[in-house]
Image (cartoon, rainbow, N blue to C red):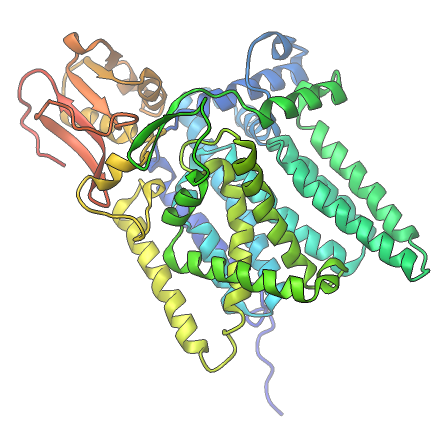
Length: 525
């Protein structure tokens, strides 16, 4: 009689759990390396107002002009901040990095579980985990982007709960699905799109029941519970709309669907203004040049293969079947992309506003890879996937902590080519490295610094240790000791030649510190 193996070691979710733990450990080792992006204080400010309204009844939330497009994740961070009694800026923002990264990685573990349920293959589930957790740009953003990445995380959770709810047909799971969609919408208003997709699927189930002359009572209960869950987790984390729920939600929806941001961006070598329609190629180009090549190829072929299968057997995909999960992914990728292109919606800073289309793209890529994973080409397919993963990891290690400036090989990496064509380190996180360098290499009690955007400097000074913050003061060029630049909207070199620090990614400079007075005895880094 053969001995049974350890059931724990044989559990299909164990590899995903191991990957999750390892990814969390990596995050705990590197979270302090990332600078502060332009938007972080602006994101936290309205959440503080929401907290004061909830806990102290302050009306500043409705009086002060602030961005109230959704506080779902930010208010969670503020409650943690208050529970931990954090008062120092460095402590507050370091906590936010840890929580944000773990929140994202938790959703990626949910993706592992979902992928295993869809394909019953641990290699594919591990590959999917890697494609999501270690997509270079999103990996870096998971520490400091508390808008787009938490929404990406909730989209993944929606997909995972949706698969379980429709497969098991349990009412409580539809309540959970409503919670997931509601909370996602409290983070970004676009979450309502996923709620509509699910309601369409529920409506289709009701129609099929009626056509077959079967009772649809359970499906109506599912609709009711889903709607209740959606409304609860939409409104509870969003205090701004408590007083007039319908009116203020519709106002917020209108503002965010036509967000009035005016600024410049660099695309294909040209500086463009956001108040004028961007070329329809803006998102497709950014997407094509910033997703690792194999993942891009698999996703595009997967979309084609899945579309062919859908048009060949549409009824199978519309009914409550395994295939309908992939119809949801197809909708979730194309609906927002088509909307942005045809409505000329304002998007900027690469394609971060549409990062949430990447998970469904990954799932469709796995749909294609799954066609070959069990056949005679299995070893070749696995080997190529591992090779692509290794190339991605090599880039991330070599260019840490600037993974957000990843570009694939579909665009030139010649000297300064990327800097002259596309926005690179647009959020100013690299100012942290510049400040750290000056702290270590300049013994002056006070340093006067000049830069294009004071916000980038002020934000990253908050990440310094207390004793070093007062050493830096923003000043005009004529009286500055140092000039810092991340080249946003200024891809050309500056005339100064006394460069004391610079950071490069893929042969393009993303940040420099110029010494304006004297000649320091420091090495170029």
